[in-house]
Length: 361
Image (cartoon, rainbow, N blue to C red; front, side, top):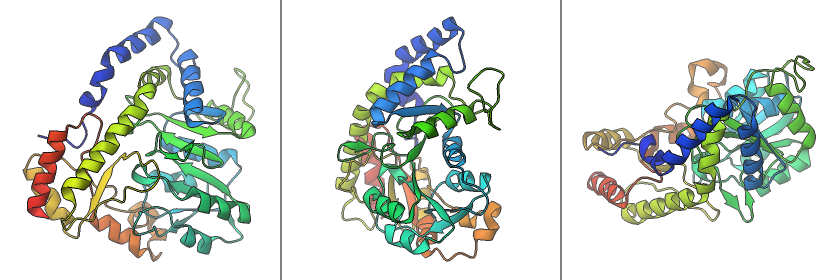
């Protein structure tokens, strides 16, 4: 059996260090907003190349808090890609904003700057650029649009830890970025966790207040905040894993290149490796016979996943978006298939997966 993701295998090289870090948290008896979180925040900010990283409860909260801290609310429009995890849209509607879904580029499956430009109105306040599957959006083009129209440019970097554009990393390419540290991410903890990165001092201060019940001084609540704090245990795990992130991303790229070599010439549409530093959170192929291929892989003992089978505008929770014409997003939802890809995956396992696919596709 080749599982789609193997948390035990991924964390095994770091297990002894993680055990020591967790034991240290228990010995220190500080579990919320203690020294481990402060140290990880400083390390992650340096890694991303920004002044601030603020640990929060999860990736959804990271995006929601950015929007809240910038003062967005009812009547404001936020443009985002139509093919994204529903959390991107939930962050927008959670504060009363209107999501404006952009059909993606059919080749990159990312936010298309030309489409974004066409959707800007007098009510538009922000663009959320989702770095899907580990590949960066065209942040130069999106940044130009944001500057010309006076918009905030926010990165949804939940799948792009460590991705580079030249010397700049994800998390430092817009006004602010939201990260998730869910266990399957390139930099994952052992539960839910997230962070906001930014160079905006005022934004960072406001998010620190919002995440902690609207307080920076104990028992003094200046604004209506929430409880969304990265805890010491998860911070300790992340601190162990962060120094290994670049090496693990290198491994992901090597595996993606191997898939590309072995599957080239089949009927599958393979992912564009891109010119930037793609970190391959996911290796996603496309096929009109996706469901047949997935069933055959499962029968062969190979796990797969679909990111995402139902786009936000087709979800029951967002019936009001169902009339929007988004043909590329609908097409992708019926064709995409994520193959196993993580740092612990072996070359032999990739070769076995490719062997099965070559016989099918």
